[in-house]
Image (cartoon, rainbow, N blue to C red; front, top):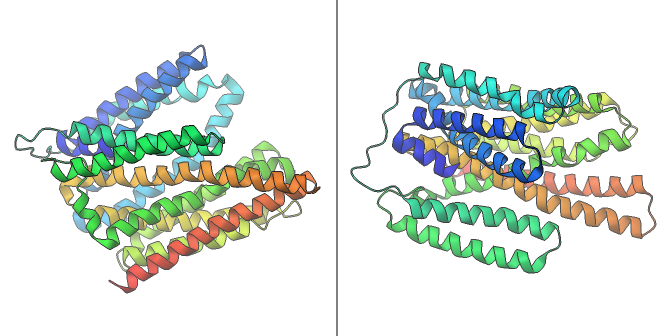
Amino acid sequence: MLVAGKLGDRYGRRRIFKIGLTVSCVGLAACSMAPNFELLLPARVAQGLGTALAIACGPALATSLYPESERPRIIGYYAAMFAAAGAVGPVVGGVLTDAFGWQGVFWFRIPLAGLVLALSWLLPQDKPQTSNGKPFDILGALLLVIALISLAATLSLVRRGEGTAALVIALIGIAAAAGFIRTERRAPDPVLRLDAFRSPRFALLNALNIVVSSASFTPLLFTPFFLTRYAGFDAATGGLALASGAVGTTIAAAMAGRMLKAMSSQSVAALGAATAAAGLILIGQVNGASSLAEVIATLALAGIGLGFFQTAYLDGVTAGLPESERGVAGGLAMATRTIGVVAAASMLTLLFGETESSALAAGVGPEQAFSQAYALAFAIAATAAAAGAILAWTMRRST
């Protein structure tokens, strides 16, 4: 997504957005027709590449439609729509899977993407960034992709207990990251200008997005199992409860866009991280005797915090880069969020499994063992979010 954002800045965001939608349509069609996993996998990769091209340019295209003074409000609405998709998508996907099988999840999106592609001519024709004859930073792009893929693979291998393979991949990733830093310092037109990270506030804001995104992904990792296996809810009710988090994020993101006109992005980020921490610690305390209303309230509270934080972060990272690099800003926002999600999926799952296994080995019953691991995972996530709130508030105090 970082590379896609740079491509949008350099060659035109509307153009890259349309190319991304086209590639995504082809990938979705290939996924829906894949007869086995071996063919589904490369089709998913193609779909992911197309989606990255489109999503990375999204925030830049949205803000380009309005005056710069309206940027915080528009970013809030954009983040709200993104969260709304997170609420609607799983519900629609579940209905389609029940009715048409897993292929329906893919072919259903083809006409939607096609409709957006047909309407994309309504977007303004943006002017590509002037390259002044500078070549595209292909080496930097490749090294960046290798470094991030290595990070994801290392975390996955650690979770599976493959220490030797994880070490080898980690060393490859470190070498690629070092090469990327060296390349970006020398490239005439780098994929990512590293001098932006000389600002402690900008660097810390991106680090906080990784931390808070990781913490906020915890409910999607473990709460579905709690709802259906231990709380006794059916799948439809559990899905409704999970959707309350995304609904909270949607509402808060729209509100945050207006709040940013009166408050700094650091203040809203601190409020969001603190609210998310409160919601996460409460989620970890629910049990089989908790009512559906209690579960929904805790998930919604965590979602509200995420909505405040994500909007403030996106506004902060956008303001921290020149207007000509809005595509890079959007790509950076999505990339740091994805790193947080991958880290949570790998490390928290590993911790959860070990905690539950230890409790079972000690003679604890399955339900109590699950509850202990569940509470510990959310306590760690809440602590991380609370630390993010403190750091964001510190940034605000030092402004």
